[in-house]
Amino acid sequence: MTRQDGLGETLRRHLSGGGRSFSFEFFPPKDDAGEATLWQAIRRLEPFAPLFVSVTYGAGGSTQDRTTRITRQIAEVTTLDPMAHLTCVGASVAELRHVVGGYADAGVRTVMALRGDPPGGPGRPWTPHPEGLDHAIDLVRLVRETSSFSIGVAAFPDGHPESPDLEHDARILAMKADAGADFAVTQFFFEAGSYFRLVDRLSALGCDIPVLPGIMPVTNIKQIQRFAELSGVPLPPADVARLEAVSDDPDAVRRVGVELASELCATLLEGGAPGLHFYTLNRSTSTLEVFANLGVGAAH
Ligand code: FAD
Image (cartoon, rainbow, N blue to C red; front, side, top):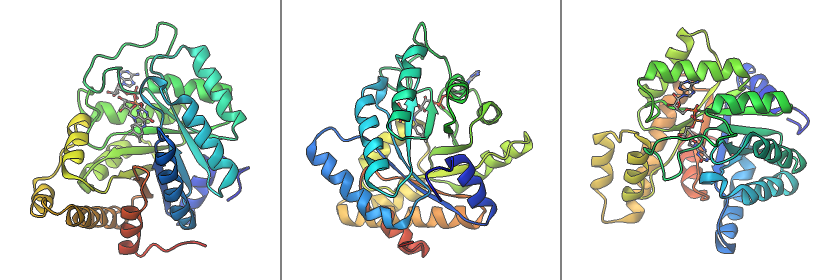
């Protein structure tokens, strides 16, 4: 892979040659200590030659400068291909164009085009900026019209909390693919069946966009319960029981989290998923242990 290739094109070529796409997601840290932790994770994961790494965008664009700085640094000082996330929250079309231009200047060539959660968090009513965009698909169109970026979009195996049903979600994702999205990355989920059913629904709509499953190895029971509740993602009772059986031992909780993620990843890959996207929370240990369990080795 070279940086000159668009990620969308690279991904298609890689998958059609029988390859699988591994990728890692990071968030822009708030302080120097967080930044040191992030770079340690990046350096430990880099030898696994992910197809890309992504950097999230804070609620309401609150991390815009940090997202740009971190993605620029990743492009400059590592061998990794960074994707910068972008949301429509609180931004006019002119501001969104400006951020995309800033990403281009920073050497970023791939954007994750998202609507973003309503200010105040998931579950609150969504109100677009008066001169902004209403949905992620509008941002896909804007990025497609104004740049040659590759574009990723979000997918929701268990449904987006605001969607009336799963069919609606699949139709929206197929529309985003038609509008120019190159690939999708899913919300985290815990049941492989949810992912495969989403891919089947897309296929029934004639949509074959690569959908990369998002994996979040559990490291802390309370944290994952909070994330799952906010995102409307069901935690299977059998998984909860395995985690709760060791709840008084944080190391054992993390170990069980790695076991559960490894089992999910193995089922996904065996069932034909095109790869895995890890929500690292800026740590590398759990992801590396899942890779070891799957027999995925360092590339260099
Ligand atoms: P949309 O595609 O706009 O969908 C939002 C809702 O509107 C859905 O219910 C959808 O079905 C519906 N909808 C969409 N288009 C239409 C239409 N044309 N007509 C009718 N209904 C429609 N948030 C951040 O703030 N920063 C991040 O960095 C970030 N990264 C993420 C990464 C991934 C992989 C995922 C899965 C989510 C991420 N999010 C992030 C959260 C995301 O912004 C929220 O889940 C948000 O509520 C939905 O974003 P979306 O891009 O799917 O929006």
